[in-house]
Length: 262
Image (cartoon, rainbow, N blue to C red; front, side, top):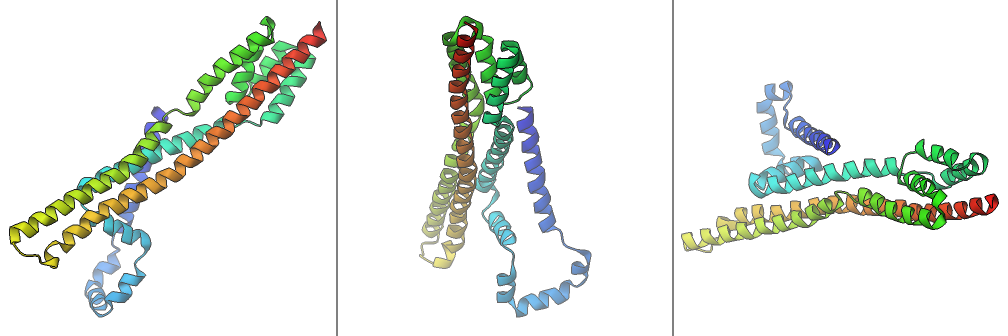
């Protein structure tokens, strides 16, 4: 949890820093404010075309209002914080399975069970942990070692999938919040029509546009988090496949080791 909170704080600092950097106006621009205003009045279309995408996105976000936009942004920050923490953890958990299996087999043949366990102690990752648990029960026979590997493999899978369900929650929650903001905005627009007693497009066009922005940003957040989520799931599947292959290899090693010593 400490790692998660530190990553979350870093993400908030980066976002706030970029927001302030975009909002900061240089001193020479303030000095020439009159000249700039004249140029903007003369060429509004050119300025609109030259506006960077991130600036346009920020302006639209501010235009959408702090209510639902703030909640959608919170979903993005929390989802990214969890996703970054999981990606770092999964990358650190990745092990060269073939190299580890070769080292364990060489240690097993040369120094026995304890030498193989020492190799596993010096290697990080769930595959090395599974090897260690199997080797620790090797004296009780290959069947006992297999049961220990299967049981501990389930524990390691739980560690790999930790907090991933929160990312899927934010993926579903962000567009739903956007849709809710849109529906509430439409209701407010129709309230204005009812209060005015006139179907004037200019009366409700601004409100409807702002309401639709919540849906747009909700979908953007869901798309971003979905990309990270799919990468994390693919990474977990890859590590789980390595764990399963390593389990089979370990049992074969123990069977061969037992046959040689009998």
